[in-house]
Image (cartoon, rainbow, N blue to C red; front, side, top):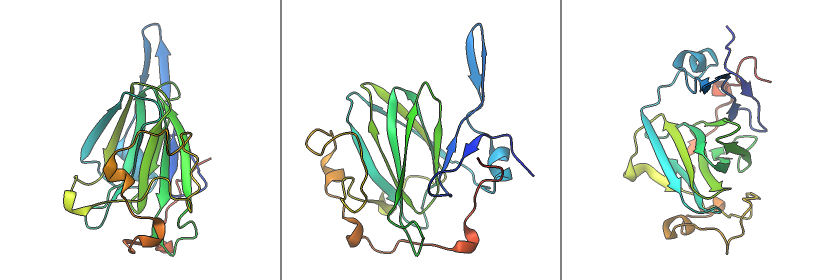
Length: 201
């Protein structure tokens, strides 16, 4: 069964870019930003249980790289509802052919794109404009005991955030996260469980 949800492949097949269809009229426009059935048709039969919103007043604000470990691991569906961000997902699944690699995407209120980040990935973003608002769904509840992080500017990741370390606004907690080589094996790659969206372009 195919889905009408517009999905684009990325360099890491399990990370998806989603472009909701917009229906403009004289008043503005309407978009369906999430539909459980569409995700299920694409092989992701999951339920998002919590919505989070962050507001960043300054361009160059970095939040990340964050993740939760099992049994509270989270998949995320991320979008910018005001301003824009460079959104980043890093593969932390040991044994994965893309372990330690990342996908980055510009998400903005104007392009309305979303990034789907599955479990087993660290996630973060850098604001590209002042007064940026980010909204994201998560598939598991927030759990402080299972919260972990990866140092955002780890050289092994090679992420171009668009902001140098001395210029980025980032909290002290995120600055203290471990490097990639210091992370335990929280996630394991299972080739038989990996899904690529049906009909993805």
